[in-house]
Image 1 (tube, rainbow, N blue to C red):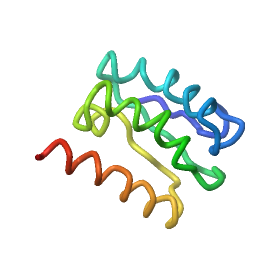
Image 2: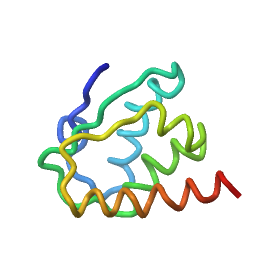
Image 3: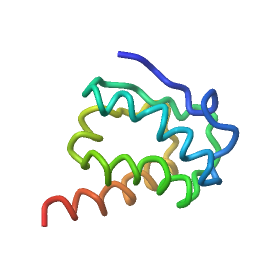
Image 4: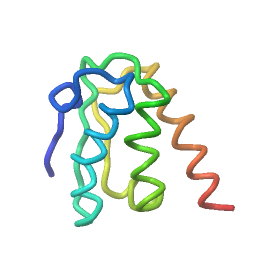
Length: 97
């Protein structure tokens, strides 16, 4: 399983354009149904714009189940974990309705 360090892929986590870069990097794993680990070590606060253009766009295109199957997170701070949970819960709830 490959690991991608978020700070090696993007310059910041507040812009849509940076989120699109992460989208492009992760999409290949979802297309091929291959697992990947995303390391959030030293990542700054993640904006909703970044979430939407990266994780949200991937979930909309491939579905929450495939995203969850392929993308795992490590080195997540407590505040990042809370934000990720809130964000992904909204998609999970949509998929089960």
